[in-house]
Image (tube, rainbow, N blue to C red; front, side, top):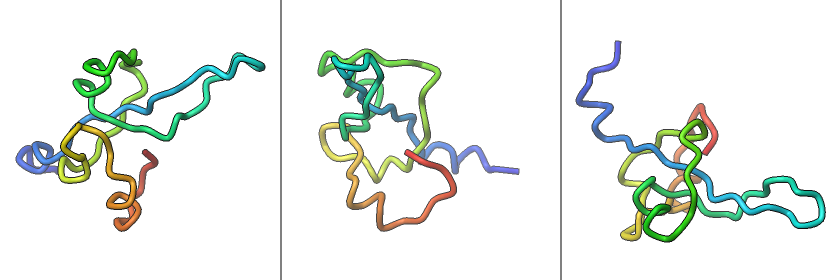
Length: 78
């Protein structure tokens, strides 16, 4: 069982998606961030599309530091 204090070190993050004008499909923009960062910067958040990551992986703006995340293997995708 997971200790609840372990979960406090994680934050829910969401991918920033763009719509491809030719196909209408969602395409990842290369950004992943916290709910508050995305809302602050004018992005919509799909509440069903969140993932968890360690808080330490976010930069000062609230976006995932991709280089830091790549250094740590994980069993889930972000």
